[in-house]
Length: 248
Image 1 (cartoon, one colour):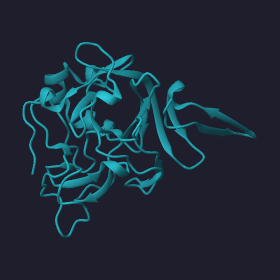
Image 2: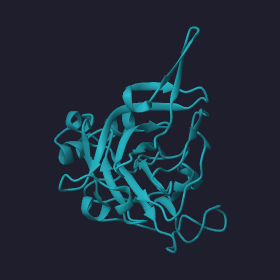
Image 3: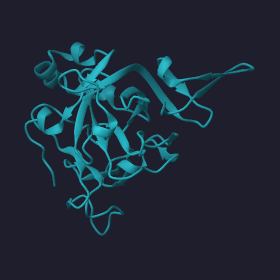
Image 4: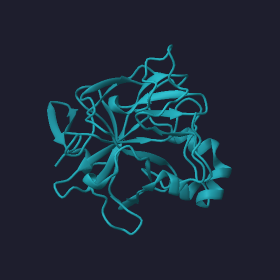
């Protein structure tokens, strides 16, 4: 089983190893990592069949909602393996470690699609945030910004923040103050994928506070949108989830 690894909870003189998929709550690992565990849920397609890691189309934008019914995430099968053990830092200066992609090629990643700059996010009407495929140009990458001019980046088109999906969505350019929160995945021996938690600081609280009218329209209200995903999450192509994908 490919998973994030075991966390160590230190209490008094005891040290207990805990698998992140079997406990809910905020945990601090011995390396300083901030990790929020949620229900372990299986990723399924629109027909209720398990998503198989090897069957994902590389560089295609997929979306699923987790850990809340109204918080969307990007799922991407990158063209090559990600970096491993990437040190990242939150807006408040808190350091944490992203362990890398999952799957046989260590190339499958998932990130919360809420931009930490001004909470631009995926909704059912449109999205300004998405993965830009390798070979495609984006205005977010210029001579002044240390990212490739030919894609392989996640871009928030609202203010052209660019993130590196190979390095835990480290900020490459633009006004974003911290990386996108990472959705921690497990890849099982049967090639299925499971979401188990969130790594790094998220923006869920602010999101639910600010977008009440939108959440009421699209999910039937804030309470329904905040409901925790418990058993499974449906994965669809981003083009099927939202009406308009806006890119710059």
